[in-house]
Amino acid sequence: MLEDADFILQVVCQDRKGIVAAVANSIASQDCNILESSQYGDAITGRFFMRIALSAPSDMTAEGFSDAFTPVAAAFRLDWQLHNAKQKKRAIIMVSQGGHCLNDLLYRTSTGRLPLEVTSVVSNHTIWQRRAEHDGIPFIHLPISPENKAEQEAKLLSIAEEQQVDLIILARYMQVLSDTLCRKLDGRVINIHHSFLPGFKGAKPYHRAYERGVKMVGATAHYVTPDLDEGPIITQDVSVVDHADTVEDLIAQGQDTESRVLARAVKLHLEHRVMLNGNRTVVFK
Image (cartoon, rainbow, N blue to C red; front, side, top):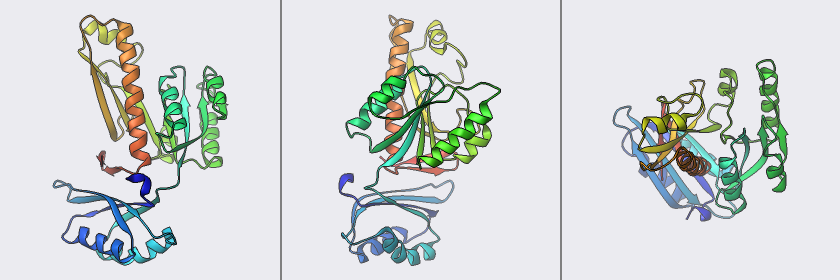
């Protein structure tokens, strides 16, 4: 049904009676039709979250809808955003040496399963240059060292601004972004990592998990914040490990799970189904 939507409306406010009715009446009064509607009231914080996908008359503009919706937003003190559902988001994909997430994202994008325009692939290695260029995507090599990290991050910011990207996807990019960069890109960077953290930090986590006899491998996709790997979680998943599985089996399962979880998180973000609730997220399926 989302392919028929013209706009996605997101609403956050203090919960009170009449919000849903007022929003729906405003939409109907503009001759728009609600295709999807999801809402959630957090009993602990008292915050109310709402996402609506709607179709609109052919001559309806975002500015026109916003002008008519503003009185309702003011009356209920809504924090709201209106998104063009027909416009693909632009993204940079960053990768280091492991290419499983990159390849999965490029495939899903090329087949239309992700409503995404990849403006470039950025890497601190050149391993995946031919893969990106095969798809006609510019490849940018930004090698990182302690001495040039600030300079390279400044280049990354410049590239993101020049390419007018909405999102940066860390598809197993094995460099820690600085606190300054995280703050400048707040809410615009999604990362993926294995779910062995914090138990198996550092190098070769799958080998140490194998030695420990873990019974599942998982992955976590989250927004990037200055707190390393502790940003608001978008989605997670696991796969079961058998006693007969080797280290190589664990790694293969982990890579499959990471690819699947990252793609799911990106899709949820692109469809504006994720809303921040402090350090947690509200995710409308």
